[in-house]
Image (cartoon, rainbow, N blue to C red; front, top):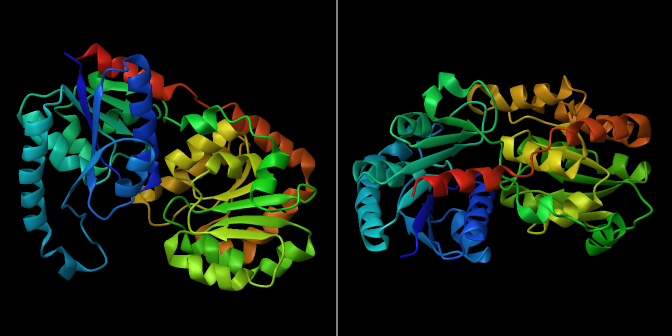
Length: 362
């Protein structure tokens, strides 16, 4: 009888795309595996997972809202409801293993699986583990992490350092720069900057870019600008009447965006960094200032110290970011050094290592 595996979690591309990479690697090793995803209703996994060709079931779950305590009143009811939904889904599907990739929808799924004695696995992409994963790690079979030093969060004997899984279309990207730039309707003869705040966008980056569009134009730089939904309208308005700007809330074909980019502006979440290492790009990082334990600044400084990236703080982005990007675009020697050094940090087989270990246990 074929094996069955549930992958749970989501909320952002940083959880969803590694989950899809792990699923693809599992099926490559054993094409007969039955695969089911579980995510949070209304979140981006409900759209992105089916686009990748996988079935997903949604549960009614929400995270703790730190900005509005009144919105947390319904949280215990949602959590309780989600446990009943999870019980039904797991009962019907009968998984041999459950994999959690982070995001609040993974908690009730792995918690219930652990209570039923089903082997559970966790992928923790960040250098600071989330509270849910710390709790779940106590009963997990294996915990896959991106870097050393995670013993402060998880039992040392359960940890396996694999790196972060990167989407295969980025690992195997063979698209030429010219082809990629034409895909966005831009000019291959001009320096091209990709600005991305991750799958949900980044206010600090977007406002800095919008305030300095004249500087890009004056310096002959064109822009691929992924904004996230919240800033999409404002960006479109700011770009109206200007040439050399392609803007949208989300870029499904990130392999084209990376191939087109000479310089990248990015947050410094774990998954963004993993992809940029594989893509070998000269990057100016703008860490998200409200990440737990300020781990995005820690991530970015780790690269800055290895001469594998530059960093501008979110609070200084409006004044400094575009100036730093333009200086970098003019300095080919520095750009080449950053590309060389970030490329050395690339891990391209994390998904295979994770899939191989999961299959050992079931």
